[in-house]
Length: 358
Image (tube, rainbow, N blue to C red; front, side):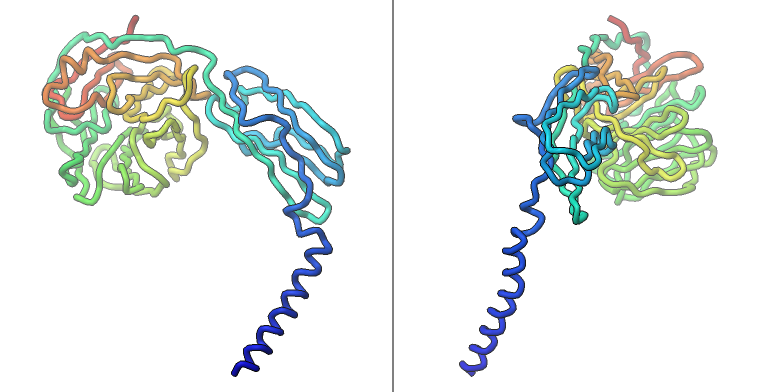
């Protein structure tokens, strides 16, 4: 038995020699190949619209070097000579946010290696401070844990959820005069926690918090038409007439194809200091995204092309006058026909007609 073990060990040593000796002669593999590298002390930060000087070093022997910004090729060098280079990168290509910068080296044997870093682009403007001023008070159902709030013409729709009693998620038209749900309406079973809603054409979209499901209903009948699956959490919804716009609780807002619910682009929401997270219920008003900041009395006005925060609305007067024994501010609905805007909160007994001004 001992002799058999000795033979096995000897065979293993011979096999290891056949593998290791060629590797030692070749210099140890691709991990020792010299690739193009950034010549900067760390990740970069800049204001939107600024040019950033990107310094890097290209060694001998590379077939190609590519500079990628936010996964798009910014520049390419074929059969480059060994050199140090500086490239001016404009930060307004993809709006604000944290972007990836990559130097991709292609070697003669086809090996491709990446050297990467981050570029953090903050807004070039400080948000203008506005206040939500109360014009009128209307009733709201205090049993509604408001998650979505949106007009279709003159008809207000509401979507609800409940953190303590799953199964109380409802969606449908509500009376602006009484706050009560009207027929037809629909509800989800106890396994789902409803979140934001939006109406596009004849369809109503409703996302769920942690189930990664979007339900699509016929507006007239509130019957289920379709459902989609997405990655991550669902918080708020609105639309710009072409895309479904969705928040997930972070600083990211995703634009989605209404027919497939696939993501078409993503923006990150930044002010002049940094990212603004906890973006919750959304509304699209006059070409801008309005976002409740969860657990605050603040609403952000966001530029949809860049993600810059243009204005910050202080709505704490509504919290003082409307919260009562309820929960946080959440819910913005703009009536395009009357040009009136309404806001409420979770379990609030009041809805407020508001105007935003200094």
